[in-house]
Length: 173
Image (cartoon, rainbow, N blue to C red):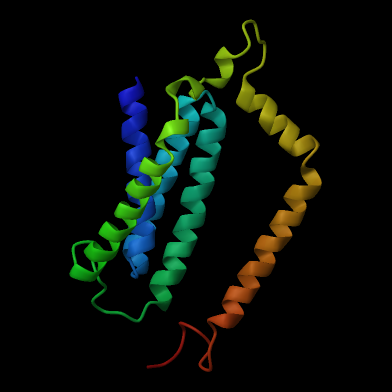
């Protein structure tokens, strides 16, 4: 069981490296999908099956919009792939940094801290992720509205920054 979690966490690190090392938006979107899948796999492993499903659907919808928008604005006809020399070198540098940091902090890591949320309470009527979603909408409603407004503002800022002189991606060549 712990081997599967090690495998998921390792693929999550590789997703981070793919995102950080690749300058092309096409393969960066691939890394984001990989990262979202592994993150939601970790959540579902620890007992948050409903929350991981909702987050995965939201991540995929948001990444589809980001990928379509960045692919429309990308002017590179031959993007650098994951196997090109520059991407491999920077990816190896990032992996060496992750390995160095994990060796440095290895002493404080214990497997006993991996406890599933539903196993912490012996006779619970509610699942932990359902209670968290209910609390998020009841007590955190103002924060949800505020973060939605911040995302809308960020969308307008990005659209204004990438607009340019010729009105963005819908320009005549």
